[in-house]
Length: 235
Image 1: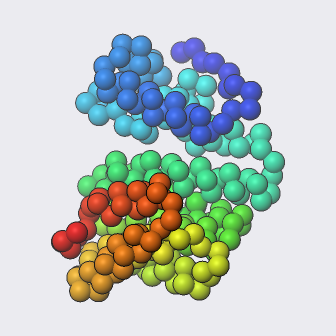
Image 2: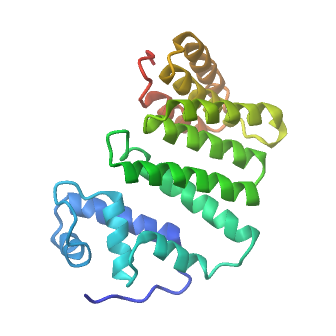
């Protein structure tokens, strides 16, 4: 199959955007997109072309065997050290959020593991490149992923750690960090059979959301609070 060279100063964010566009195009039945998938990823399931399928197609178009290899190749062009940790922290965080709604506890085990390990890896890189706010946000992501794939006790552990960091370092936090922390803890408590405590956290998350200054940030929080699963807790 023919391949093409990576563009100069390639950005993984741009490549991820291309993968999202390809996924949508295949879903809409565009012949050019379907042909790209057929040539570079002939084993894909025509009934469900996922973001991971699109990413693999993009990677193979550039002559690489996998999306992680593409990530590594792009990253080698960046400076080493702290900035490299920051780069991987951002990219792994974004990729994990992208995949979060596509993978759950009914998904293949390897997909569940990759999702969870991606969240852990993002947090580890932020420990090297960020501050306690970045750490708290990493803990939040781990909690959400763990709950999504049925690892409820792990989810509760990391949700508690997220709130602990938010409360210990308020000067480093944005006004939306605490409501997000309480949202994750509410889900985790509900998932582990503690509905009264979960309701109290959810009520606090909603109240704090109303005090978030930025309209865009407030909307993001409201959208997350509207999403399930709430594990039996009436949202």
